Image (cartoon, rainbow, N blue to C red):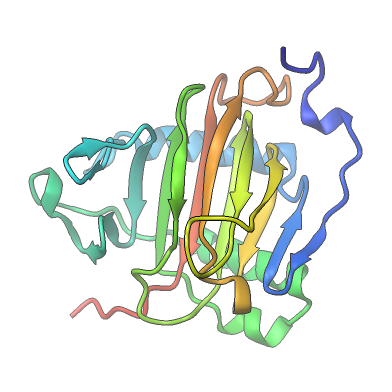
Length: 224
C-alpha cells in the first residue's frame, strides 16, 4: 500500500550520492513543475508525438518524445526515421538555462555549468506500470553531464556501476521536483527505474497520474 502522504511530506536529504552523482530533492518549485507539465502537453502535439520506442522489436513501456535531436536505439538524428521521418522539435533555450542552473547548484562549479550546452532533451512519460531497464546513456559524442528532472509520481531509481547491469547498485526514491545529475566517474553508470509509486505526486501537481522524466544531454553532434 502506498503512503497516505506524498513524498513532499517527508524530510529528505540530498547532495552527492557518489563521486559524479548528485541528488537534490525538491529542486523544482511547484510553480516550475506546473509550467513544465503545461509544456509537456504542448510538446505532445508537436511533429513527433509521444511514442513507445522499439528495442529489439519490442516496445518500451515508457512513452517518449525528443527535442533538439531525436533519440532512437544507439543513435541520434534530426528526423524521426523510425517514425516516418518527421523533423524533431527544436531544443528550447529555457531548458539550456535550466540545465546550467542545475549543474551550478549541484556541483558548485559555475564555470563548468556556464560551458554546459545541452542540445537534446529526452522526455519520458511513465504510467503506473512502466519501468526502464538498466542502461547507459552512451550515444553522446562527448562526456558532458546528463541532467535529469522528475515530475509527478515518485519512482524507485536504481543507480548501478559503470561496468555492467549487475550489482553493485543502490536504490533511491526520486520524487516530484527532484534533480539528479550524472557526471565525471558516474557519467556512464548503468541506471534504470524499477517501479512507479501511484498516488505519491503532490496533490497540486497538474500532471495527474504518472511521472515525467526529462533528461538534458549535450550530444557533441553537428547540425550539418
